[in-house]
Structures are given as C-alpha cells and as structure tokens.
Image (cartoon, rainbow, N blue to C red; front, side, top):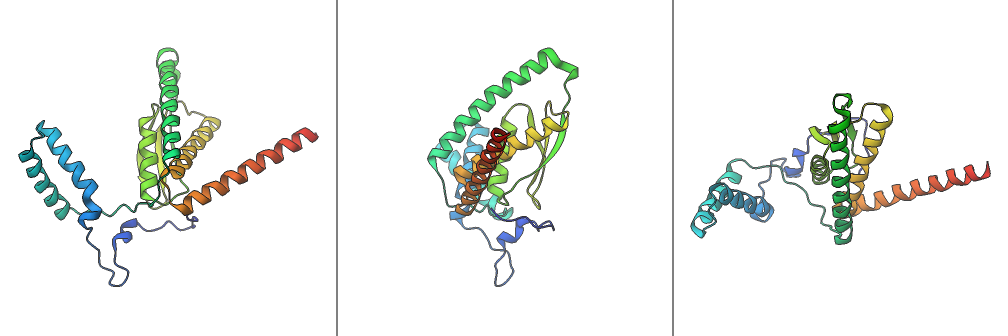
Length: 217
C-alpha cells in the first residue's frame, strides 16, 4: 500500500510505458488471454450459439478488437489467499442479505422520508485491480452505487442510500474501507497485505488503550 502524496498522481497509463524509450508497450497474448476469453464467451452469448465455428469466428474478432483498441494493462498483485477469498465471499453474502432487508424496510415504511447522499471515499490503495474490485462489490450490495471513479487519487464517488447525516456518512465510509481491507487481504499485493495488518494491529492497540482508560475511570 503506497503512501499518499499531496499532489494527485498521473493517470496510470504510465504503467504501459517502457522505462527506457518512454514508448507504450503492447500487451502480449499472455497478458490479454482473460480479456480474449471474456470476449469470445460474450460473442457466443449474444448469438446464443456456442458451436466451434462461431467461437472460432468470435476469437478472430476478439483478436482484432484487442489489436485495434488496446487497453492499459491491469497489473495483478501476484498473490491470492483462498481463505481470505472465502471469508470475503461469506461476508459479502451477509452484507447483501442485510442490505436487502434494509432497502425493503425503507421502501415499505420510510419511502419519501429516506434521504440519500453522494459521498467521496479515498481508498488507501493505488492499485487499479483493488479499486475496481471494491467498486464492483459496492455496486452489487443493495443501497450503494458507484457513480464516478477518480483514478488519480483512487477516490470513489458513490450514491449511498439512507446516508443523510454526518454519522451515517462516516459509517458508510468505514464500511467501504472495510471492503477495501478484505479485498486486499484476499488478492492484494504483499506490501498492501502487510500494511493492512499493521493498520489493523494499530487499531486494535488503540481500542485496548481506550478500554483500559475507561476501566480506570
């Protein structure tokens, strides 16, 4: 997890530039194969035809698309923890259920009294993969929706249901940072993983100190 600077960083299109020449490097098929597979499957789904001939034709079209419209590479962390992935999935399912109940209650009983907010949340990470994953998780949980992403500062702008005062906005931001923490624990880089562990340890220490002070009083 990198430290934030006061100045917003440049767009991460620089990740695709060759350090020596400064020219943009072309992604290889090894880098592009997940996108190619997705495009081929999408082609088959659109035509509702997964025959060999149609998929081969879709693969040719996919190669043409990635050649004509290259995207900046998404740098993978090179790390995945299956246990934390399982925990993330379980936590996500519980959040979906809880949020669905809350949204149903607001729709049935609060209706027009419900107020929403557009909130900005600065993530700690500067990884496109983590930012994108956090955004998708938030969008899949009822009551929240990502309306804009600032890649320069890793900031998510969200429409959040029932976040009409400062306390609820603070809770919403804390929940989003919790999603970020869980995603980093599951698929973040080693540096981000260690940074998250240190932050969590510091928080636990502060909580124990506050409890001990309260007990002394």
